[in-house]
Structure formats: structure tokens, C-alpha cells
Length: 64
Picture 1: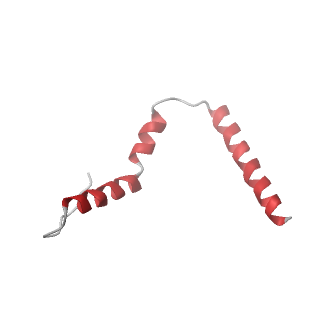
Picture 2 (picture 1 turned 180 degrees about the horizontal axis):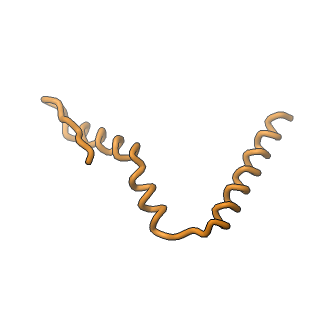
């Protein structure tokens, strides 16, 4: 449970913004969205390999 202490005279919009920022940092929504559907391990491995190849390609271009 997130607790956001509201300072005296603080605008409610500012407190809400602090709450949203703190909530985003917890990563709860990302975790829930990820759990909505199952992804096979082979698909995850393939995506990781593709990402690694893409990053390597960018680094190779940067060296040239």
C-alpha cells in the first residue's frame, strides 16, 4: 500500500502526481499486464536473441 503524506497547503493535483510517480516506480501495472497472457519460453528466448543482435548491430555501426 502506498502512502503519500500531503503537506499542509499542498495542492491535491501535486499530491496525485507524486502518487502516480511512486506507483509507476513500483512496476505493479507492468507486472499485471505481463501476467495477463502466457508467453512460451522459446518465444522469450528468441526475442532476447533478436534484441541482443539488434544492440550488437548498433554498436558495430557506432564503431565504424
